[in-house]
Amino acid sequence: MLSQLIKGGKMLTKSQLAILYMVASVACFSVMDILVKYLKDAPFGQVLFMRFFFGMIPIFLLIPKEKIFTFYKTNRPGLHAWRASWGAIAIIALFIGLRNIELADCISLTFLGPVFVTILSALFLGEKIKIKRITAIFLGIIGGLIIIKPTFYEFNYFYFMPLVFAFGFAQVALSIKSLSKTEPNYLIAFYFSLLSMLIGLATIVDGWIWPTLYEAFLFVVLGLAGGYANILLTQSLRMADTGLVTPIKYLSLVFAATAGYFLFDEALKLTTLVGAAFIVAGSYIIFRREETLKKQVVPTRYET
Image 1 (cartoon, rainbow, N blue to C red):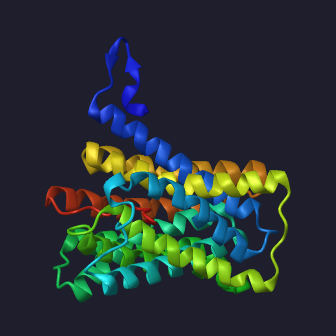
Image 2: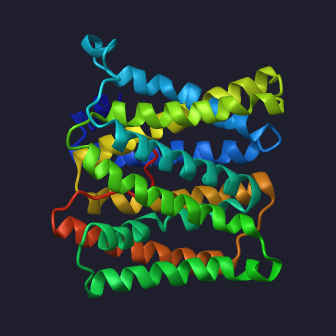
């Protein structure tokens, strides 16, 4: 484990370990995103099913042995259903976006999640929006418009999919804020993963492919990468201040741009860089504000 790493004969500090966990989380999320795009010739529902079928493995590893037969019990089924439903909507929208638009554009637009969380918190939770949050919201919106603007001429509907993800993410984030007070992480993850897996399984009637050995290997990697990404993210956030590790999340844009260029022949556009800069600035303002107020901070990417 990372906690066993040694540096100069001494154990790594908690902050150093938190940074390593966050880097590993970003890498896992990026691997998942890249594989979803790479496997675009495979049936969509099959890819969705495989992501959560194999993604269940890390979840079950977190369940205490004494609760293995009762872990699914909850007193909050309604909120679990709400969280799982919006989580499924968000992940389906993300997968559609990844398969149909440039990787860097898609990942940049997903960073709007915290902006939507802020807006919905004000609308439904009565939280006050002051100048810093207003500034953050406008920066995020401007950044999103800069990225999407070229597509209005071509009317590419798929550019709205990351926005659907970001809105769904906001619903998920608000639900997790409440659920996490009483429910363990593995249970929150389980119901979302189960619903997404069943939705994918329902598409088997549309015809799935029999994967080659190589494709089967990629399906396994896809599921494990997605499952472990959230575990690593959670561990990082528990070990260090959000302000220290949050900026590392934006490395995913670097991974997306690099993979897009070398694997999918996608040229990185200036509008993507400028728009992403606005979105990242807005998101970071939100994180710094919530950290200052000692509120529960929701990361820029959290599926389970």
